[in-house]
Image (cartoon, rainbow, N blue to C red; front, side, top):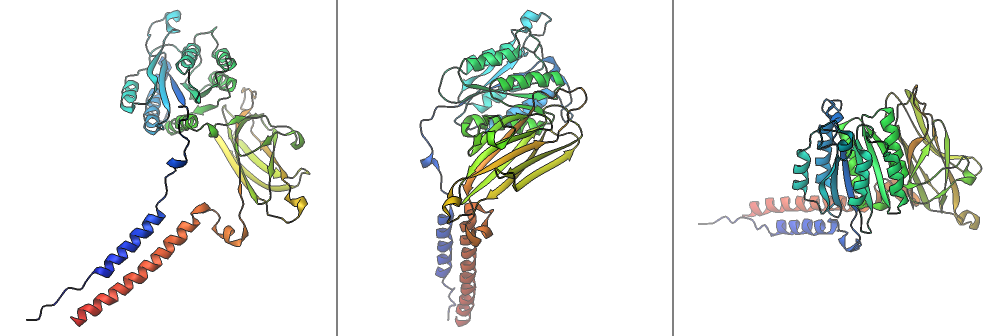
Length: 425
């Protein structure tokens, strides 16, 4: 009897070995070896207003308290492991009418330290809108909670109303915290705020170099709180306060980084950046509408020479309600063999806004501006221009293409070889 033998599959094994080797070569390398060790732990305390007004149901059809709880749960899930996080409440316990007692109502719900996500979420779940709004006393206690350590420290205050415990003005409290030289930044978020709440929360943030954000939707709240917690873990992405000038020659010189400023309605602000040959300047700007503005508005970011010649611009416009508007630009400076052209070129960045205040709304202080400047190696030659936008991942695309081509050839050869073996047997 002639027994038909099954074809040997060793060549197929070689195909899988080839794919495995390519896969190992393409696997992204971890950067743990390059990360600095022994850095001081950043600390963040979330300070939440749990006063009676948090019962209002005006955030995406739900209560302000429900939106805050959802945001806290999402932020707790995403908090970096290196961040020591705490939670403090104000107005969560006392239900009576005694103002003196109500203004003492601030408790640390979760102590600042390594995060136990389950424990922190359980604590947040028990909260219910209750009493007064002692913002000033809560900020004083929060500064004490963050005492000690050399890492970055940040208070994130979420409130929907004004402090009810004057004469202890929370803006004065924030200035006092800043004057201590303990380097605590206070960021504030107003939930569906009115003009008075906006003014007070903006003043608190400005006193310590923090930011103020008006929030009207759950997704905005979760995103912004998470962003601020991440900034504590990465202080290099925390905006640096800077004051733009009315002309380029007097403007502050900026390097790569993130900067914060305030710009009056309908004004121009100038900044300077030194761009070397072969570098590309990438700049973007965002303006937060932290108060009611008129329906039509616009934002212009313009790069010019010292003599006023426009190099490139980015612009954006809109109508109706907005919380922020952003635009950006890119300027690649070519290489040159000339000694004169090899010197850094001064690029003037002008930020212009066309916001107008709504009736009865104060125009001071100006609107919060966040400006990002990035200087990177520019595209060099046609090949780099063709791959621009892929960053350093262009080589990965090329290797994957080659791997697919080789795999197709090998698979075709194997298929023909199998047919030949079966016919022979």
